[in-house]
Image (cartoon, rainbow, N blue to C red; front, side, top):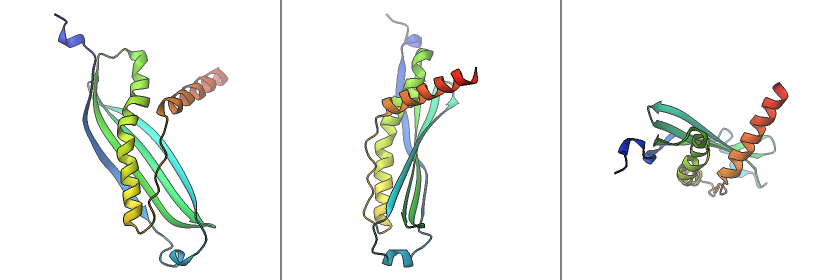
Length: 151
């Protein structure tokens, strides 16, 4: 019989909306504009240990729409998850935190961002699907390049 203490463990404990803000600083005048706004979307991923074998992974999105230099609306959202991760080789932990966990959390973030924008009276902005593996690999390559330059 295998020892239970050495089996790999990867479990979702909870997924939750950690932070959400909506600003419409130029309303109501900006709502009368006929011009199409530009949309800027920024995404980020963070991971932090909470307790032994327990990690919080959060995905943040900032969605800003502007007409000329005036903001129509700004949404900032952070969706997080608590994950139990034990007995995973150290060289695989980065991929778990940077790929597997964000892939679980991101669909919740997409839904919440679209919902709050819709509730604010605008057509929902649907965040694109994200390839977290490609994003993680780019970050690893950038970090390796920065380390090589620093030496």
